View 1 (cartoon, rainbow, N blue to C red):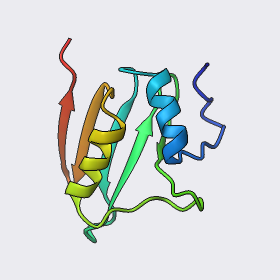
View 2 (view 1 turned 90 degrees about the horizontal axis):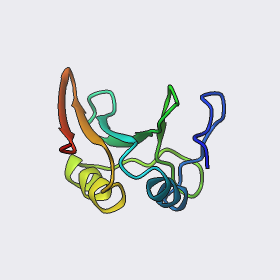
View 3 (view 1 turned 180 degrees about the vertical axis):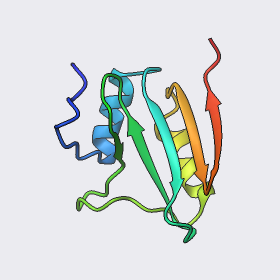
View 4 (view 1 turned 180 degrees about the horizontal axis):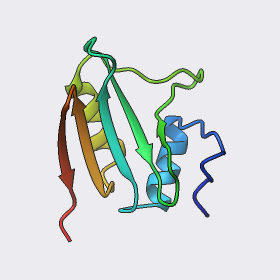
Length: 101
């Protein structure tokens, strides 16, 4: 299975996320970001050989939003354990975790 091209739109629901994390284990990056400083959080995944990061979506097609960073990180830990890196974006700060070599 090849990574989707940048021009293809991905509906990254939890089910599709499970398939991608198994397929691209250790080769994808995750970002947890605060949305416009309002205390809500989103999770996005950047796949290998793609330019864009794709947000995690709800089953209805809306971007999934968490009310606190702990909830978003709990989701990432449960569903994206094989990520090559996880970055938390808080305003101008970036807190990054990378897998050891």
